Length: 287
Length: 287
Image (cartoon, rainbow over all chains, first blue to last red; front, side, top):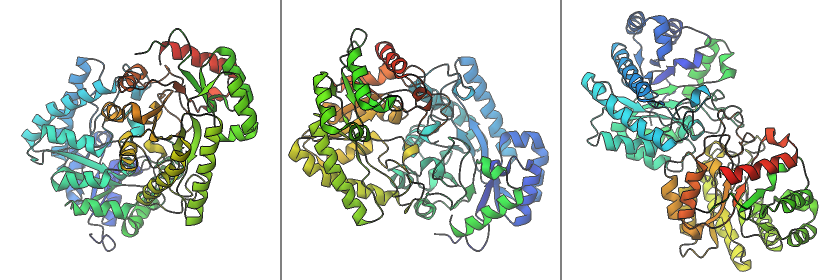
């Protein structure tokens, strides 16, 4: 396994981690100042900062991207909604190109309307079919501009509202169906928070291999977890076996960054400098 | 599929559903008065009511059991703790016999100490090995007295604290390893709340078949879900496709009751009569 203790080359900060404390320009500056190697910005933050301005700032700061968050949300109650989602994913791909991201992370969507509290359907099988079709349709444009798509399986507790792809095996089945040659155009974003519990995790990481493992995200699962979305833990504060999982990921050939992605009401209430310094300390000692 | 609209023969009430309103004797009386066919009592409620007294009341009321909740919790930080768990499971099996239960439901346990908020280990692989050994050891006594064990896969959001068996496939793999002849001594309790999200659910229900499907539990998944334990919904109030899943279960050969099991702070605050009458109405129309 790689040694993370001596420098920050392989550390990435998902910008949601300090999104309530700083704008994206401020996050880029704070990461660059610390020698953090990479970030993964969110679309709404990029739009707020201005795409070309932030692309220039990132390039000037010699920071790379570990991904772009996020495309997906392919499901909708009607055909017009699904077409709009495809159009939006094309824009996201083009933005990812402008930012020189290595992949566009896909949070694929789930029951239409559920995220807004009013599900228009309870048919998760139908949602999964729409997701499959949406990825297939998006893959054409992604390939044409050379932007890999990274399907992110989300924890089953988020299956109704955010993503109906909920295991690594399920994501890899889609990859195999749509990209059987393993061209590198389609893979997965593996977030320990979503998959740590999976009894098939080690085997499916080996199955994924370097060609499919496009991103690796870390945080921790707290005991107890008090909220289904915004109660992620800082690495080392929970029960995820981070070294063991990274061992599996690296044994499968992954050489990219470990991206810290923490949605946490608790950490959002701390100063950004303290959060980033804690991320660095934990990256060196427990990731 | 069976018609549930005209009588309550196949309805069971898991007694946790109204545990905060009534003692077990009161629950048995309220269910019998309504013509509800079965209950699934919890051990602490049975102990509070007195085992032989409650066994007599249940027999006199012509109510059957759909299961006995619950054995399991096999994991522990040391060998003495694991031995104590095995001893306690033997007692639970004997109680289940006295109550004439068709199976003992196993919530298998997870990281030792996590349920109390202080995990002594974060090794979920080790916990799974302890669970496997615990079920194997318990199965001998269960077979000797003719009490089937029903492994209940719990939702992955409860993998750290309550059960490290989290998919039907994982539970069935254990059944196949420990009871390859499908003798009926080992099977699963399938609760829609825990498994509705699983992309392999239909296939694994078919794999389970009548020999392994020992119990079927219903409630609903609410949008949004605000708590990881006590925010279950009444059938029809959420997004679980109850008719579709029951269709799969019955196609696999299951002929037992549909057991309503609702842990809900909201429903615990309603009068027991209202809760039970609502269970009956929803059983007839949406289960």
